[in-house]
Length: 87
Image (cartoon, rainbow, N blue to C red; front, side, top):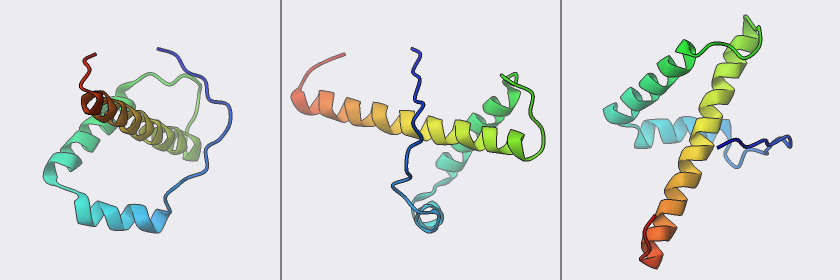
Protein backbone atom coordinates (compact mmCIF):
# COMPACT_ATOMS: atom_id res chain seq x y z
CA UNK A 1 0.00 0.00 0.00
CA UNK A 2 1.37 3.37 -0.93
CA UNK A 3 0.40 6.53 0.88
CA UNK A 4 1.59 10.04 0.32
CA UNK A 5 1.27 12.53 3.11
CA UNK A 6 2.67 15.83 1.98
CA UNK A 7 1.37 17.81 4.92
CA UNK A 8 3.62 17.66 7.95
CA UNK A 9 1.91 16.43 11.08
CA UNK A 10 2.12 18.32 14.31
CA UNK A 11 3.35 16.10 17.09
CA UNK A 12 0.68 15.29 19.65
CA UNK A 13 3.39 14.38 22.11
CA UNK A 14 6.26 16.43 23.44
CA UNK A 15 9.84 15.27 23.58
CA UNK A 16 9.60 15.37 27.38
CA UNK A 17 6.54 13.09 27.36
CA UNK A 18 8.22 10.69 24.94
CA UNK A 19 11.28 10.36 27.14
CA UNK A 20 9.19 9.88 30.30
CA UNK A 21 7.06 7.24 28.58
CA UNK A 22 10.18 5.39 27.52
CA UNK A 23 11.23 4.85 31.11
CA UNK A 24 7.73 4.18 32.41
CA UNK A 25 6.42 1.80 29.74
CA UNK A 26 9.54 0.41 28.09
CA UNK A 27 10.32 -3.26 28.47
CA UNK A 28 13.19 -5.39 27.24
CA UNK A 29 10.79 -6.70 24.58
CA UNK A 30 10.07 -3.14 23.42
CA UNK A 31 13.78 -2.35 23.24
CA UNK A 32 14.40 -5.50 21.17
CA UNK A 33 11.53 -4.71 18.81
CA UNK A 34 12.74 -1.15 18.29
CA UNK A 35 16.33 -2.32 17.88
CA UNK A 36 15.29 -4.89 15.27
CA UNK A 37 13.19 -2.33 13.42
CA UNK A 38 15.98 0.26 13.49
CA UNK A 39 18.58 -2.24 12.27
CA UNK A 40 16.19 -3.19 9.48
CA UNK A 41 15.80 0.47 8.54
CA UNK A 42 19.58 0.89 8.49
CA UNK A 43 19.87 -2.12 6.17
CA UNK A 44 17.49 -0.61 3.60
CA UNK A 45 19.05 1.06 0.59
CA UNK A 46 18.80 4.84 0.74
CA UNK A 47 16.09 6.29 -1.49
CA UNK A 48 18.19 9.40 -1.98
CA UNK A 49 21.80 10.20 -1.18
CA UNK A 50 22.20 11.51 2.34
CA UNK A 51 24.88 11.54 4.96
CA UNK A 52 25.46 13.07 8.32
CA UNK A 53 22.49 14.74 9.93
CA UNK A 54 20.23 14.15 6.92
CA UNK A 55 20.82 10.42 7.14
CA UNK A 56 20.06 10.39 10.88
CA UNK A 57 16.92 12.48 10.35
CA UNK A 58 15.79 10.08 7.63
CA UNK A 59 16.21 7.14 10.00
CA UNK A 60 14.32 8.96 12.75
CA UNK A 61 11.55 9.84 10.29
CA UNK A 62 11.29 6.16 9.33
CA UNK A 63 10.89 5.24 13.01
CA UNK A 64 8.30 8.02 13.46
CA UNK A 65 6.32 6.76 10.46
CA UNK A 66 6.59 3.19 11.71
CA UNK A 67 5.11 4.29 15.03
CA UNK A 68 2.26 6.13 13.30
CA UNK A 69 1.42 3.13 11.14
CA UNK A 70 1.71 0.76 14.12
CA UNK A 71 -0.67 2.92 16.15
CA UNK A 72 -3.18 3.20 13.30
CA UNK A 73 -3.14 -0.55 12.69
CA UNK A 74 -3.52 -1.33 16.40
CA UNK A 75 -6.46 1.06 16.68
CA UNK A 76 -8.14 -0.43 13.61
CA UNK A 77 -7.68 -3.90 15.09
CA UNK A 78 -9.22 -2.76 18.41
CA UNK A 79 -12.17 -1.24 16.56
CA UNK A 80 -12.61 -4.38 14.46
CA UNK A 81 -12.61 -6.58 17.57
CA UNK A 82 -14.96 -4.18 19.34
CA UNK A 83 -17.46 -4.52 16.49
CA UNK A 84 -17.02 -8.30 16.54
CA UNK A 85 -15.96 -8.39 12.92
CA UNK A 86 -13.15 -10.13 11.22
CA UNK A 87 -10.57 -9.02 8.69
